[in-house]
Length: 448
Image (cartoon, rainbow, N blue to C red; front, side, top):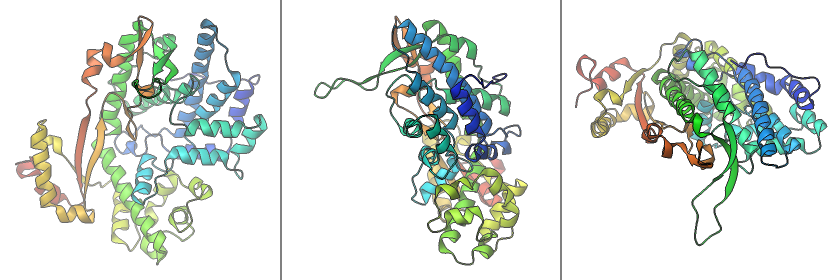
């Protein structure tokens, strides 16, 4: 995909990246899948956040050179130190992902812990007892905090920030192509070389002007020339297709909810500290138990968690006396998944879908309450959808230079405009096959 990625011995930032890759915190990413449980649906989707992060670093170097070229063209000074910060930030941006990434964040949120992977990333980077901080501090005084602060920032402050957070950042330029390749998804072509050749830097407005307040804020970001419009349309369509066919695939979502249910149950027993080994099948010093136990949510315990650890413990969890834990563990181990019912099976009429959902909620009220039926209505996509949620901020939208001025692409493209409206996916996952069949109606059809 990228070809040979070279780390030059004459480049200080490349040599720093090389050392960081060897750190245990970065090597942990070998054990975290980029697409979580998508391999249940797409067997080839076994690529890791380790490979992805190196690809992001490679893209960041390319985008930095584009900034260098654009600064020269505009007779502006290139900030070498700022460029070094964003390249290392790009390399380390995924350090804080937990096992199964967004699924794990959902479990934590349900427990009242709203701590996203970006916050964990910053903590891991700043951890004085870790291997990352000493390398960054040795490179330059204050460098560690500068990298962490960049990754924590929600709003961009300059063009360098766009390397790690924009409509055309180094992250999505890697995962879109990598995920498409590894899942074997045929739809949605990306003319990467043409797009990169047509990247420019221009200022966009972050919000609408307010007559009574301060003037609208502007920030420099990546835009594309007008001749790249067709390729930009295909770029966004590829992202849309991946969300539709891969990230929100019904089987993948089902597995995510099953794992979420399993981890939530484990966490409950770990917090109660009552017959943990019998109830969960895991020893008291197992990393999962230690993390979910009282006072266990530390950087050290978090770094002990990964996909391989949890998948490897399914055999032990299958022997738990808690029937929910043992059943879920065995189902996941043998791929005997809950049965899915997609509300869209009644047709595309939204009124009819809502009517049918109301009836199912009424008929299966008890099962929805005890978790034997799971309702999933948080998956929604539009042309700007992001993994883990929708992203509506201006700097995340793609801009085309029209007459030298940046214009959001949907203004110029009727095709993109048509896909701005969110498409909702509403599914139910049934532990009991008979319940699913009852909800579907006779002969496998949903009836009103």
